[in-house]
Length: 282
Image (cartoon, rainbow, N blue to C red; front, side):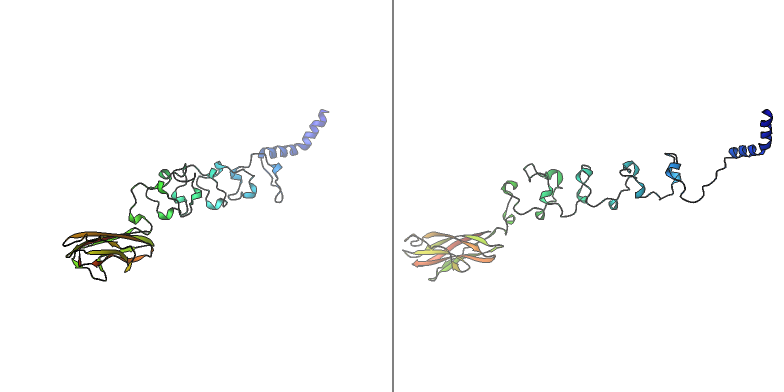
């Protein structure tokens, strides 16, 4: 038995030496052909960054929900990476949206929380820059009396604007039989208005039993009742005051002449001082 073993070793010593040297050399042999290494030929978790060519990992290589915030560089996600219409309120940090992020003229009443000013609604003190709201930003019929500070409105604040006109005349004039304009003024209204007119004239007489009658005129036409002095209230070298007033509705925009005209009913009557004022209310 021992003789046979020694004989076998001597006959195969060269083969054993070759096997030993091959094992010690670490020499590897490549696999013939391409695409010959499969997933089951690789030890799990052994493919590292250095083993993958740059730019070779595509969408098809990524599992669903496999890329999280930790895999993204800060500031690397831009608008093209986000699907249109996918950003919701929950995706926006509180206080992140300012004026620069809002499209001009895009915010409407329905975009504001609550039901309106002063009713648990939009807080202008916090969300609106002081002095930035103009008439163009306010919807029709939104402002009521409760929103306006008492005593803050004047004529220019009213639509169309209040208008007024006034004049005085101290010239001494004898009244003509067909009537004399003792005082007149011009008023200009910007919109269709009601015009209210008041006139007063001081009349004197040189004879007994003088009487006079005065009217209000608008653009040359009489628009009032006739206001008379009482019988003999002027008297000889005495003076009486006659007041007249009237109004006209739906007066068209433009410049208008208002006047007080007086007629002598008896005797010779002289006009002394006279005044008139008018106001147009849109």
